[in-house]
Length: 129
Image (tube, rainbow, N blue to C red; front, side, top):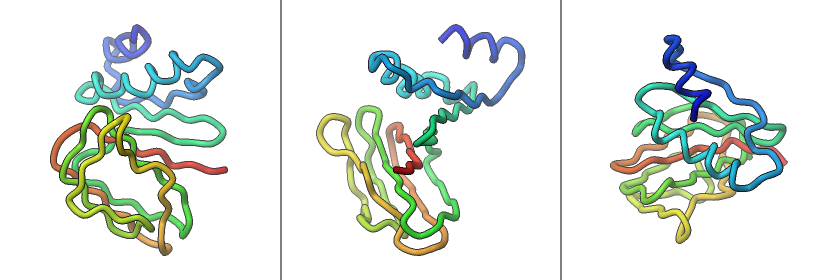
């Protein structure tokens, strides 16, 4: 938290955070979910050797190669999710942390992936094995 406040106080609008997914699970979960409380002040992207994680805007489009692993992880409850070009499509659906997530989906074909949602806070994890 204090590191993000430090950056905000100095006028930064974005931060790439490397290896905030270390040994302690409590730190990892906190680092991932904390992005929500800073979303209007700082765009945060967390990287490690296997993943890139960021909070999605309500409407998102990006080009990905076929079979790229993408996971949609809700922080709390996220409603009205619609996706295009994912193997497991979502059509106006709800994800809720602890009950239903969009983990381990993948891109169907080279091209644009579209994700929109109505309410909540949704993390996108771009993953490699």
